[in-house]
Image: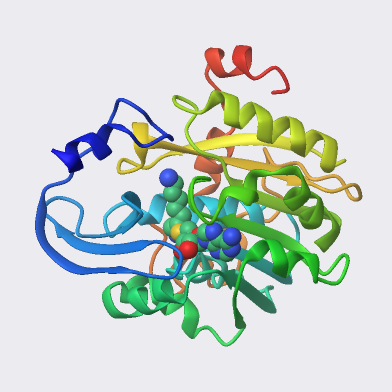
Amino acid sequence: KASKKMYFNNPMWPGEAHSLKVEKILYKLKSEFQEVLVFESLAYGKVLVLDGIVQLTEKDECAYQEMIAHLTLCSIPYPKNVLVVGGGDGGVLREIARHSSVEVIDICEIDKMVIDVSKKFFPELSVGFEDPRVRLHIGDAVEFLQNVTEGKYDAIIVDSSDPVGPAQELVEKPFFETIAKALRPGGVLCNMAESMWLHTHLIEDMISICHETFKGSVHYAWASVPTYPSGVIGFLLCSTEGPPVDFLNPINPIEKVEGALMHKRELRFYNSEIHRAAFALPEFLKREVSAL
Ligand code: AAT
């Protein structure tokens, strides 16, 4: 009964729940920050869950990780220095590593247990940590970004969990301000931006903060990820003042990046056509989010 009550009471999506049949619980432990659970599902392979929220499944992780990485890095020529916030599973690192121009991939993840669990249960994702360009920082990204040299990064990718646990501050204005400072002129940010079906207010708030903070362009994109609430996930793309960035037409198309299509494994979801399509928005969203 208690679990049924919890099921429908998550503040991010009250009154609804998505279920996956559990074949076997593989791991369940409380870290310093959250409850970490891994189970084998019947239909989606292994699943990583933090505080009761699905973070990824083996079957559909490709859509989220490829989109968040390549929407960002294909929008600028020759990305060199990249920062990932969160993303302790390593999947986004795996995708960034496809870009041969990248020299440094910093990652700041708060919870070491997520990394350890990924190395144990999700080798196809944690393979991202094996790239020699990766530098791992364990800690709170809010603090990490306060100490970054101004203009250090060409791109920052915020692959964070939903703003109900340790990621709460990652949708607030001071955090976006530190990101804008850490980016070079004409640098780009991509932020996980929830579901257009469920979180139009949160999206609207994030967009208005980003319009104030980033003097380049601000755009919303989305993709289908069946195991995220409502089956879609959004991405907020922003650029700082400087050389203009045209997010809608990738200047650095993945098909032309040497070796990108087959680095470690084939791309499963992203291509330049999907990149362009991801910015097409439904009428209701355009109406409800006035800044779009
Ligand atoms: N790659 C897809 C999985 C994630 S994981 C998000 C990660 O962000 C988690 O490992 C979590 O520990 C980390 N995190 C949360 N808060 C912070 C913080 N303050 N600093 C650094 N890392 C943090 C994303 C899933 C998206 C789910 C959408 N519903």
